[in-house]
Amino acid sequence: MNAIAYAHDHRQEADDRLRDLLSIPSISTLPENRESVELAARWLVEELKGAGLENVTISPTKGHPVVYADWLHAEGAPTVLIYAHYDVQPVDPLDEWETSPFDPTLRHGNLYARGASDDKGQLMVHVRALDALLQSTGRLPVNVRVLFEGEEEIGSVHLDEWLEANRERLAADVALISDSHILSPDQPTIVYGLRGLAYIEVHVRSAKGDMHSGTYGGAIHNPIQALCELISQLHDEEGHITVPGFYDQVVPLSEAERREMARVPYGEAELLAETGALKAWGEPEYTVTERVSARPTLELNGIWGGFTGQGAKTVLPAKASAKISMRLVPDQDPWQMAERVRRYLRAIAPPTIEVDVVDLHHGYGALVPTDTPAMQAASDAYEEVFGNRPIFVRTGGSIPVVSSLQRLLGLDTVLMGFGLPDDNLHAPNEKFNLNLYHKGIETAIAFYEKYGRVS
Ligand code: BES
Ligand code: MN
Ligand code: MN
Image 1: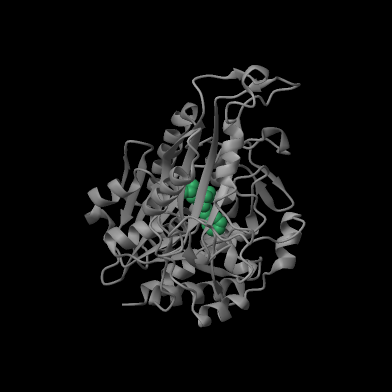
Image 2: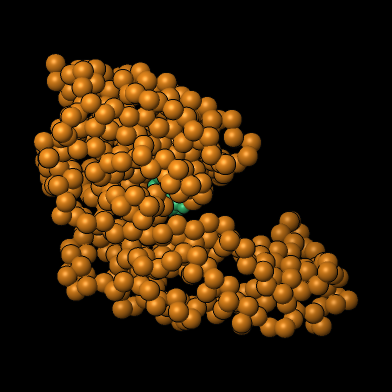
């Protein structure tokens, strides 16, 4: 029996195994879920062993564990490093979920659960593809190394250290990641650009403690107001970022790339329809597609301070804070960008307040070549299963490991996704389409077979 037929006969089993994994609340950012993250890692160890992978290990890090496995008996064939993450985002607001986030539920062909699309469903695509190949043919057409991470959603903080310490276990010709989406169910999509991320927190303080606003208001600079004044100086009226040097390292978009991007069937109308937003915003000299994928941004993620409970309280707060993240593009260095914002905020801060900028995490953006044998194999595999060749896009999200693999191991990545734009990643009612799950498994099998013929 061939692998595709095997996968087809074992669809129910593939669904059941995915449901099992989705029922483990492996939220990496919450300390109280630590054991669940560990449990998910151990579950994967058993799953990989069951599929027939070898040298399956779980390595502790200073954070959550890394799961590694390999199968290296395809002599003369190339080696693929398969990366995925088994950690998930928090579930709040919980009351907006139609069914419980860790009780995977099937509705209209979609499996609803936290992590369904990001990234457990897409992780299982590869586990099931390897399982189908090994169970049906007893071998793989390529050598594989598997790397499953438990800290992607918190910035992959300990991964670089692990990569550097395990170089010999990571020797490969290409990395393969399914952690992105395709444009529509019939339009396979390969991501060739990801943005980086620098995440900071800004704390403003004016006095040693909260004060009566009647006694002191008018003579003390309100830190919420001061913070807003600072924040309002981070962009100009057109949406350009005003931090000195912010755009210095940005690799400019070539005319050819802009032409290619203009062909992506996405524009202002789609943006407004998807989000319900009133009007588009941002750098007028760039299209919305460019703005959400190939241009850097500086975004306020949260702001707090003072009294926010019910009713009124006449308080003059002593401090206020904001969370700010920057989406970066090659070749912006996340550490340097965070430092530039820190310096700028300090320079423009009035003498009435103290500003403290704390680093949360940093990841580099990446661009990968599209003319490699692995990209060719991925395009052919998509075409075989979906009946259409993929389009190539840059995406606004971040997957820090892609740049780490490039910088530390000289490895390029193929980003072959199977999610959909409306999968509700990081939001209530996350879902993964089961038809795309099974098509994903077939596409992965086809990729391994095609890439195995490259020498
Ligand atoms: N899978 C996403 C990134 C993504 C989203 C790629 C949509 C392509 C399309 C990933 O899990 C993610 O959410 N990354 C975080 C990274 C951060 C926490 C360092 C992000 O982009 O916010
Ligand atoms: Mn992801
Ligand atoms: Mn994510």
